[in-house]
Image (cartoon, rainbow, N blue to C red):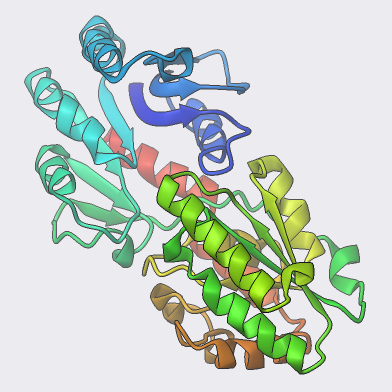
Length: 343
């Protein structure tokens, strides 16, 4: 069977979407041919039965040119695929849905976000099947939804025993994700002030970049808050880190703090759990699989500070990794999706 995949970017070094290249490698083992149409492409190494075509964003093509390229490719490639898999962005399904319906191509759509938009509602009408990581990740009522779990590469994200056994007086805290208001970093800043005032030795590493202007404004606000509280020396903003380099950061740190307000299961939390690091989360969805001692109230800096202080005594993270392996393993995800597509 031949599959057309539509996605935003194919680039193994991209922090947000770098993981998707491994999806493509594993899809390639299950399909005769895969054609990928993306907005832009960067560095990747994919099997011979995978072809990647850019719409031109990486070549500075304007949006009208990209749209023309999109429709041209849908028609020109129509005999080279039997079904379509659209990744994340509902606009792909909205723009291509009618054409694919007329061409009798099955439309499969992956979406994981708490928001419900007009584009998503329209995409739901065109799609034959919608895959999502958890029930919180697709909040539009639909009989087309199939909950698959996330796709965590548990061979890449795994514990490194020598780091887990190392001890120092300083507690090493990590948070990963795009720097934006929804990530709620001010709660971690205020909790850090409590820890510093109580003489706790710690450091905080934040991995991620601010992309939009409002995100950059938010990052400046957080850094100004750190200066005002005399906490700048405790925090290290690393910026963007590629997917292949992330495991070393998880393995090096003692505690992963997850503050995202998305309400859906977050991939970075699962990566941390798979890497054998202790975690704390305020995310609503985390309550369904994390024990109460690893949960804190969303905007409660005092509770977060209290649980951070207790976190060092909790070295038993084996059950956290086992949960990810059982419920969010990448091979299982790709097999589930491939089975549905081939039916």
